[in-house]
Image 1 (tube, one colour):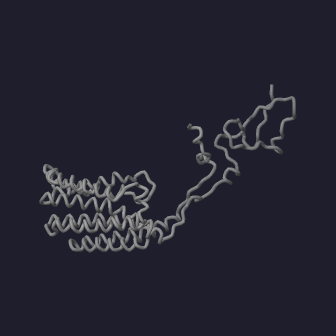
Image 2 (cartoon, rainbow, N blue to C red; image 1 turned 90 degrees about the horizontal axis):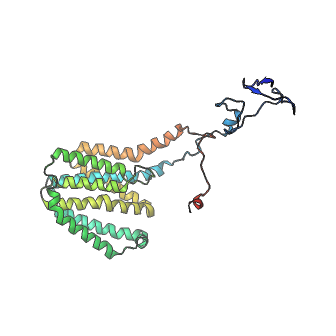
Image 3 (spheres, rainbow, N blue to C red; image 1 turned 45 degrees about the horizontal axis):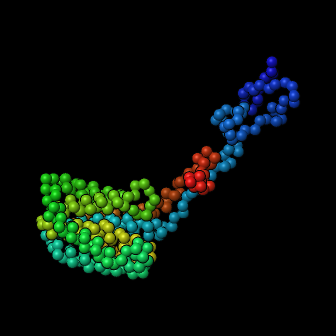
Amino acid sequence: MSPVLQTPSSGLYTGVRCGGSAPPDPVSDPPRWKKILYERQPFPDNYVDRSFLEELRKNIYVRRYSYWAVVFESAMVTQQLCSVCSFSVIWWYMDQDLLSPQKLCGVGLAFTLLGYLLFDAVDKGAGRQECGRTRWDDLKSSLVFIAFTYGFSPVLKTLTESISTDTIYAMSVLMLIGHLVFFDYGANAAVVSSTMSINMAIFASVCLASRLPRSLHAFTMVTFAIQIFALWPSLQKKLRAFTPRTYICVTFLFALFSVAGLLSISGVGAFLFFLLLMSVAFLCPYYLIRLQLFKDNIHGPWDEAEIMEDLSRFLD
């Protein structure tokens, strides 16, 4: 029968057979804990020694933000808010018959041509060469879009006749909010979906265009929605990448135009929208930087293992 020894450090009993070599002295040579699971050890399952916490690290992936750099990044959010505001103001003017569709078409076409030339001039045509598109291809796509939109404008005008106006307004508000939520602001997140964002914006424009007086109004409104929700962000991203100063100036002018347009409709609404823009542009970046001081993320041996080696060779 084997004698039984009690380990003072753990309070567990382990069997030690006689013969062979002398058993270790539990006082002078205590067993050492190993961070392994495949070997039986004289320790409880939840036991850890002091060396376990030596690998504790805090906030090793915390990013250090610069205030003005965050303000610069927030300009894209400001632009989308101004786009939604400008679209709503233009729709209200057309609904109240204060703006003719001919004038909106002419101004929109002039700004589209100017933006088109500026888009090529910023990167000297490098983006067009990468895509393999010519100006003739762009012209054909534009003509096809205009022809189809103009041809289907009577259908767009009568598309939602059976739906109440309050429901149309509610759906339009929800779609525009969804456009702002799913828009690609440059963040790598699962909620980002450029396709869903633009589809929501176009759906809202179709809903609102169906409440305008005539088919020409509906055609102009949908065309303006494409310009401000699809073409305008593309130009802004190009300016942001190549000419940051111009990008900031254009953002400021666009915000000023949006607030002035809303001011002509509602002074209270313009003031609240101005506060929203100031909060997004200056207050939110400040709080973002301040909240970094309260981060307390811990990292250590309990984290999941990350395979750093390239294992693509095993997939062949």
